[in-house]
Image (cartoon, rainbow, N blue to C red; front, top):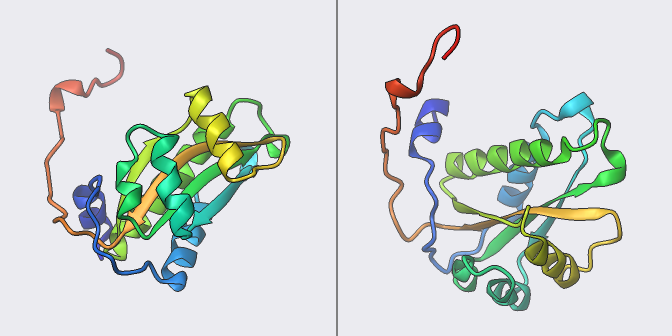
Length: 169
């Protein structure tokens, strides 16, 4: 798929078929996530790939906007190992870049995705860390729900020239 088509047609997909997300596709998505830039090239990320039905079904109890997990076939929780950070505080940006890469790669493969934020909601972060038995020092950042879409990817033009300022405000 053309890069710009992927950028302009990536949408939050919340409705999925019952087709499994192939392991090879999950690896492709995770490779794309790990190709993201990070501050000082620290790459503080870790990824928890979830395909277990009981875990997917438990996630909506943690995240009030993740009901689509009950019909999704996979999810990835993007996490940071804080001790790997080179520049404190940048783990949030690093994980966000990895999350966006993962979602664009999903679009390129025709897989639907939706980003459900965990950070900065401490109660969600703590509950997800408990559900996934994350070790101390590893912090969950984002939940990306994945599946073969049961809805269309639609192109929407979000360009707003009035939000562009040149050489100052």
